[in-house]
Image 1 (spheres, rainbow, N blue to C red):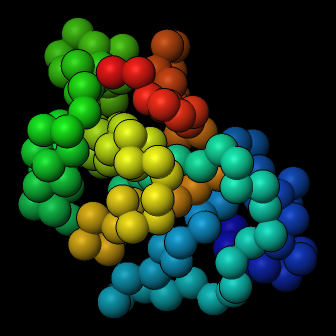
Image 2 (cartoon, rainbow, N blue to C red; image 1 turned 120 degrees about the vertical axis):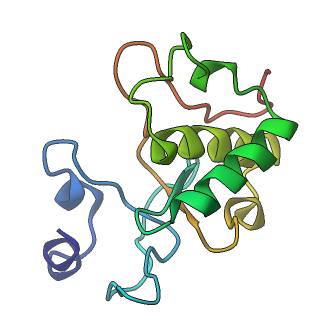
Length: 139
């Protein structure tokens, strides 16, 4: 997907893939996997912080523990609107984004030891699970 997006001039409409792709404003590369291309020229007024797909489970759990001390994580608890899918990746993304929004969408608040990235498509999913994108975050 990234190769097609880069070759097509990095336009937002070239990165939809039937809503299965996200434009990352931070480099999603890791030590074992790199993605070529410069940052995209996109509207950054609505941004979200999500876990990198390469983040390991220990880091994700640590991120959840940290973010949930600072924000309301009730939606990712059992019975919450964002509990399913019940994976560390989804729960961490929700918690990390809540912290990022509460911190004023400062890029430094979406680093989480290089295990997170900023995206421009709302990662909310399913029925009723929406990730916050506006300030101030009401929790």
